[in-house]
Image 1 (tube, rainbow, N blue to C red):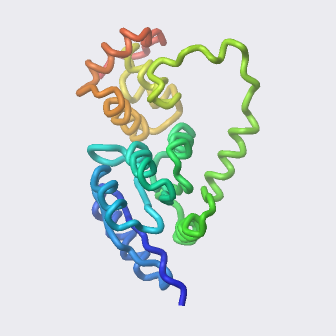
Image 2 (cartoon, rainbow, N blue to C red):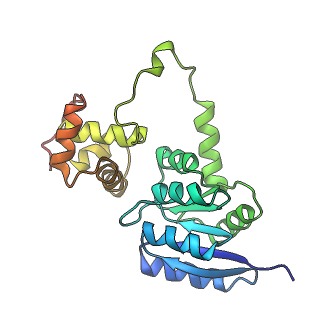
Length: 228
């Protein structure tokens, strides 16, 4: 018989993680070899367990999933990572791809989609699910040719384009609800972006983020409401 696919599940929500583990354990060709609740724990278990596939949430305590994926792949270049997340924006998707993830599945995906992605990645393929694949296709179809001025230095290159938009709006004095309305995203997604921004810029709160952003020239967007 073919050896089962050895999977490490990394998610900070215990109920979701344990439910996913129970689901995968019920599948004959899959073995859950470990569970992690933080980014750094994921890195340690990835190195000690050498799983075939790592199911990794984007939003993790102490080190987010994107950064954890990068650090894992620095040492284990053949590691196969599937990002499993609630985030639906294109920036998170492309950040995951740049980090080296071979798959990306939304947490709302059905069982068949999760298993298909997991098995495809275990076999060495890239798999992003039908919803994500459709968005990727639409994104590349809408790309415009770059202009000579597009190579100008980018402020805070460690941030995604959407995170820079959010930071710019924060620095202009907008609250989370206004940011969500202006960018047409959910409040939860705004909060996730802000957590990423704080982590990447190494700031403790909104005030420090605003100071750092304004020093870099951000915050010139119009503000609709007072900051929170």
